[in-house]
Length: 432
Ligand SMILES: Cc1cc2nc3c(=O)[nH]c(=O)nc-3n(C[C@H](O)[C@H](O)[C@H](O)COP(=O)(O)OP(=O)(O)OC[C@H]3O[C@@H](n4cnc5c(N)ncnc54)[C@H](O)[C@@H]3O)c2cc1C
Image (tube, rainbow, N blue to C red; front, top):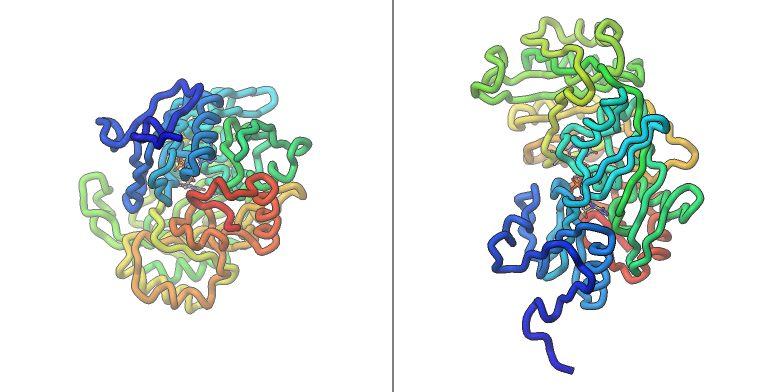
């Protein structure tokens, strides 16, 4: 048998109709780029798929050549390189259909939240999107999907009703409560290791106007506001989602003059109800915080509410918040640019009987920092619950910590059934 001479000789994609990018070609560097500067992926071939047949051709070729295989929609959640492998890009398969009568959206694997937000808003409906509309619907949902309506409607994964999936052996199947039910369970929060999702159907929710924005206080208010926050959250209704941020504001023209260059304690709010209801609920917390430097809250549409995100360099989950944690966070705020203390609970902690394996649902609060503060991880660890959330995790060595022990065992069994050879191995996949 003659040996292949070039990558093109070796990697053939029979029936493939999309575009390919090979090392050395002018657009290869652009095509292999993700949002994660720490990942410098060098695939042997990048295949831009135009349909399910293209996805299957790329998958079967990766299988037959023994090369790594990875899917990329937007690159927002790319945490591992696909060196020497076949990277399939799905950005061209970005269809979005909304059925307003059934309140269901059906999307292609390359769809972004911005598209679904726009399509659903025409009918007074909203998806359970997150802080950035540019994020891909499928990657976000496979990882659980924690948005600003999650306390009211649960994780995005909880709203999935059906998925179409290309399996590791090339079969194309439907996963639903009645077809491949274990696969359907695993897809709703078990991450990307079970197949290539070629279409996703999920519930939309009747939300149009919300009360949202930020209230900023001097950093001197941080200690008393944090102390009030840890008990106030227990009485917060599901319609109200909040986070308390400790921030060093940029000293630039885009930052409001009252905050420019200052350290602040900042309350981030989204209330799926009226302004008056929200202000009533928030009153005890606002009283504890004292006079605000700036109040940027107001009524807006859900799609226009800009909640901002916190780049994640450190994350811990907490079931209780003792004084030691508050003290450590206040000290860390002298070095960190942003610390976000976010309230979970609500519908997230009350899964339906058929809900998927999303994260540690009983978590009361998460803490995310955009800066590595030396010593902080050790200070927080004894008080944290040890879990992590797949979508907020950069380090693939901690993937297993994203699920409870019981869910991890069940996910491994689903992997063995649907991907017995461990074909899907790039990224946050359930460890064998
Ligand atoms: C600015 C920003 C804001 C964010 N905000 C939130 C937030 O508010 N809430 C939240 O929960 N998360 C949030 N995230 C995290 C985000 O949801 C995850 O990073 C998610 O994995 C991104 O999916 P993607 O498709 O956009 O990215 P990609 O990097 O393209 O894909 C991410 C992962 O999903 C896999 N994947 C993509 N498509 C498919 C498919 N069709 N079939 C199988 N696997 C597939 C990929 O292989 C990869 O492992 C945010 C991330 C960023 C960068």
